[in-house]
Length: 475
Ligand SMILES: *[C@@H]1O[C@H](CO)[C@@H](O)[C@H](O)[C@H]1NC(C)=O
Ligand SMILES: CC(=O)N[C@H]1CO[C@H](CO)[C@@H](O)[C@@H]1O
Image 1 (cartoon, rainbow, N blue to C red):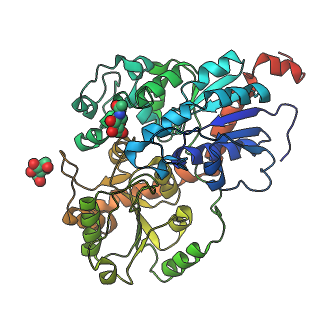
Image 2 (spheres, helix red, strand yellow):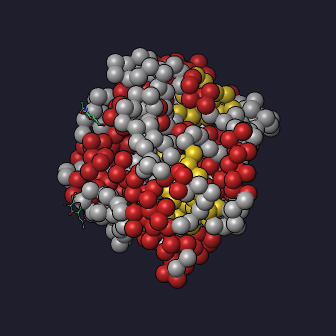
């Protein structure tokens, strides 16, 4: 891939979470595939852990390592949210905010056309406009989540919603009927995002301030999936809104042919076609001990084959690791496999034996599964997962395991019953069919390319005037 005279230089500044860095990187690859140059900024440890782009794009994507300053209470060596228990993430944000100077210096010296920044670096907008660099607020969450968050005045502190209960209802700026809102137990768990924290600002403030200071807003979304929400965003955010498509991972060879994949594949190869439930809750979620016990016993009760990627500890600073019920692994041996380290999720989802996915509803996992038409059974933990789940439930693309509304607890019976509903019963047929229908919508490369081209056309047309002139482009 070679640069041309109208190639752009775009800086990407994703939040220090793999669920954010990966879709940013996916978009970076698609843009580099069109000859544009990307500088991808993150902590050194994260960059070392990210999959390497394919060799034909490697020269166009430069990874820029920004060491994180030491912050009291932030465990040494932690560079991403997945290295930390939930209550320590505020210190990672505090360290991240201290990157303002290094980021400004990088922007000044490299003079890109555009920067694409995430919700956490809400300070990137003002820095860029001071330097005459244009900016995109790029949200890796769905348009529904952004719509639920609301206009910037709301997220910046003027929200009429004050109690957790307020966040369980449709916001008053949403004019169409929808069930997209948190459930009681979901918002209770994350309500501190609404309050001040060690970093000095709330998460909501970061979203609002970041959206307010950019030139345009890009969303990991598509008109095929969220037409009503995308049109709402135009109204409430009063900025050009660009869906960038669902960004299905383009490169299932991530991290190469590892030994772990060889043993996983060996196990999957001997299972019957389309029978295995893949169970995984993303890099940041760890079930509580009671949840873990009930999910395990539910899987056991169901009698179904499963492959479970289980995180029992969130980084070495996590003192509350969880354990499987006594004798569980012996009892399910042969039909169930529990894996406690990183897996090539995309390859597992792509395997013929896998038919179903018990997921936390993180959007990257949803996209990966639907791009193979795998039916979804939902069990949410944190962040925007509840909102994603409602969106999927309302479109009958995902089935939520019934839970106690007030504390979110789940029973082994409801786990087992939900699995058989989606997998075998007549009542669950709609979930199986919808998942198949979604396959081209989430996985089609041409659909994806259209969205990226549309964004790129705008970025080219609207590049900073000084750069147009220096490249001899007349306006
Ligand atoms: C749900 O949880 C609450 C709080 O733990 C408890 O009081 C209630 O009895 C539970 N409801 C059901 C139906 O189990
Ligand atoms: C200063 C402050 O309010 N800290 C809170 C930030 O949020 C965490 C949970 O993520 C709480 O434990 C802190 O008390």
